[in-house]
Amino acid sequence: MALLTSPFAATSRAPAAAFDLLGDALPFSGATLHVEPYAAMPAGFDKIIGMTYRPDDSRMYVTTNQGTVFAIDELGSGEREATPWFDARAAVLAATGRSMNDVTSQRGLQSVAFHPEFGDASAPGYGKLYTTMLEDRPDNPGASEFKYLGNSTHSYVTADGVLAEWTYDFGAGGVATNSYRELFRVNMPNYDHPIKMASFNPHATPGDEDYGLLYMTHGDSNNQDSRNDDPQDRGDLMGKMIRINPLESGTDRYTIPPTNPFAESQDPDVLKEVYAYGFRNPHTFSFNPDDQGNTHILVGDIGRDNIEEVNLVQPGRNYGWTKREGTFVHHQHTEPHPDTGYYYGVDDLPADEATVGVDEYGERYTYPVAQWDHNGVNVELGADWWTGNAISSSFVIQNGSDPALDNQFIHLNFANNHGDVYHNDFDDILGAVTQLDPNDPSRDEPAELTQAENLRLRVSYDHDNDPETPPVLTESFHEVVGGGRNDARFAEGLLGEMYISSKENGVIYLVTNTVPLAGDYNQDLVVDAADFTVWRDAYGQQGYRLNADGNGDRVVDELDYDLWVANFGKTWSSPGSSASVPEPAGVALLGIVAVVGAVRRRSGRA
Image (cartoon, rainbow, N blue to C red; front, side, top):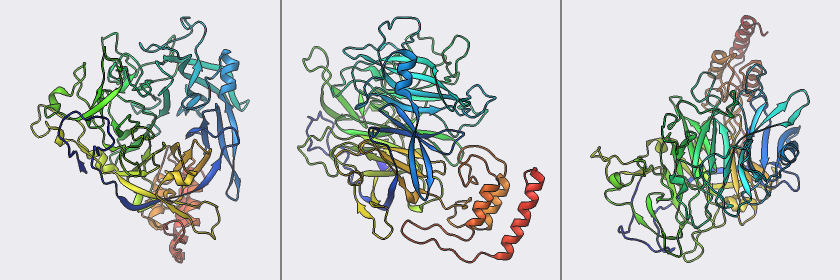
């Protein structure tokens, strides 16, 4: 756990690169990500913005800014093909007569989220999927068919952020174009940091408070000058995470969960959809369970001139932007200065931050659980140190794969200055002190704030898919992509393995040392009789990321038992070395096989 420290006095700092704001050493931990190419998008669809899964399908679904969603089909012998599954760009045009706005930079299709009941024909979420995207503003935006959410306005921008619902026609085998249903639109002040990621909590099960609720993030839409304080306003979507039940209910396009933090607010200027606020560009987030079964949302929030943040999202919290950047006071020129909105420095948090660090609603600021500054490794002082830095965050590795990565949260710099990859221990993240309490004498000074330590990862790259040649060991994900900007995004596979895509080259990479040992259901790195016990006790269970679901099809059944038998005696090994395969205890294995026959007969699934 890193204690918040700074070598400088609490005086206003000019925007000069010579300041090492955090004094963070950022050493290598000794752990490595072993990556190899997994799949590539076809020509013209290189802008990978996200990867996800359908609840009823084991294929990966890949979202591109260009507007097409692809399914990754396994062809055998390690070959894979990206097959067009849904042309959202064409569907929007056919359904509305409007165009998906551009396909460059932060425009176009932004994300796809499948309802957890997508494959359940008896449920209201059957076949439902949701897209976030930039769509051309209609000619008649004031018409009743459009719902503009929040009080934000637009300037020269000719597009809206849109959350839309679609319905998949299982009989026809495709998304029905005429099923387009708009939930809401968002006015953007600028063409920057628009509507972002939408996702359901994959760990929530029927009966859970969070089941079927859609989370979505929106950036501050304010370019580099950040001239507006929209993220501090609960009345718009700029710099927010929201949560809704997206299903139509009577005349309501969607409904507000009663447990949302502002669901009972009597203030007409407060959006009840808001779950958390005070972000700058929170474009990637993930759901991560702890040992007690509680799920925690971690979001990577892209900073401006100084700090990249990892935030542990809690309902109703204010994460500080634009008044704070990381654990610093963020300064901007105010009216009537000619450079209104432009940054002119940062300060250390004042000694009385516990008292003064509150917003207009009386909510105390919440600070990052991890952060890194812009004048760190590989950035020359005096260069454009404030640009070319942006965090992309992933999820916590929890699947019993590489012990060096166990319980680690991984993130990287995807922009120009460096492609360094970092990791933090999840326990340290959960233990970080991120708020100050003026009523608690032990937690009333900025020095009481703590963050999880950032450690760097090396990257080992199988550049040619040839087992006869050694992989290339690098210190940056830039070198994997080929230099410059890597524009990476992360995805969690059905077995808890990690994938990393690049928006620059249209390639998806598999992190091979995050793939668990097949049949190792108790995650002790060896397949033995103890794993059979886990399988037996879980037999028949259905759901997401079940320990004994060895093939990732969301049900524990005979196929997972067969997988255990096929791998009995193997031990986990890092990529590049051979798995140890001791002779299995034949008599014991035969005895277990007999037990399996009895289990199958009792369940009626023999």
